[in-house]
Amino acid sequence: MLMSTLSLIPPWVDQPMVAATAVTDLLWPHTTPADGVQHMYARPGAGGIDVAIFTLAVDQSVADITAYVVCLRALDRIPALRSWQVLRRSR
Image (cartoon, rainbow, N blue to C red; front, top):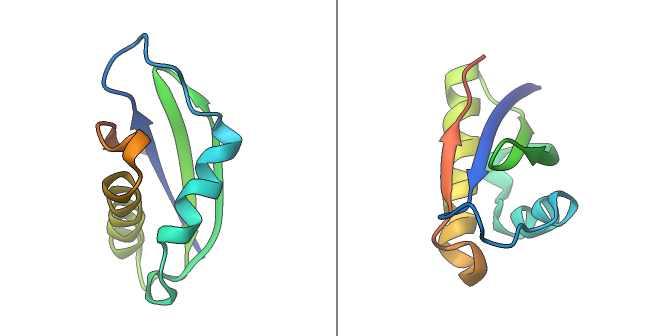
């Protein structure tokens, strides 16, 4: 299992934050079996929500792309998060 970390960033600083605990509940319905997502964790971060997504991927680059696509898919489909951005985190 491989871990990928990302940040979900709201469009402006004063926007009401979504609870970090709610983020994983919002992301899960937008995963598919092919994504291989096994676990997610979210916590408040600097200016947004930090997310760790654990996948069964063949290597780290595939895991990172999968986590990024899962987040993009969710942000595209959830009206309250549509204007948020996904930032990949470096290790």
